[in-house]
Length: 116
Image (tube, helix red, strand yellow):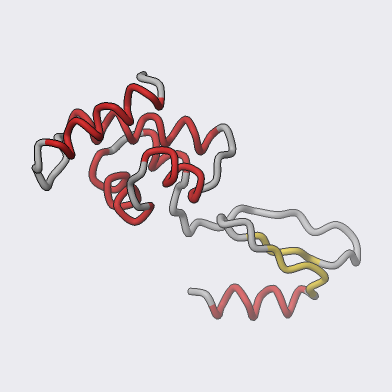
């Protein structure tokens, strides 16, 4: 995988040609770097600034390239099993990391039914 300097140079060279669409090879290279950057904990804004390509464009590419970037930010709606022990309050956590704590069982059931 190329470093960010090499990738930026390829992006600039492509832009200098005046072509609108990026070639698939360059898109793949960028998305491999983006996936690795996300795994290292880099924010979307930092990644966007590093490659000088809008995050919305990178998001579209991740859906069409099948690269590791889509694995770095999966979109899933599956629920994971939990074991309720004693009278403790429940917590719900979605794949994006939103967390709701202190729920009764009936509250948790109502929320889960609401998101179907």
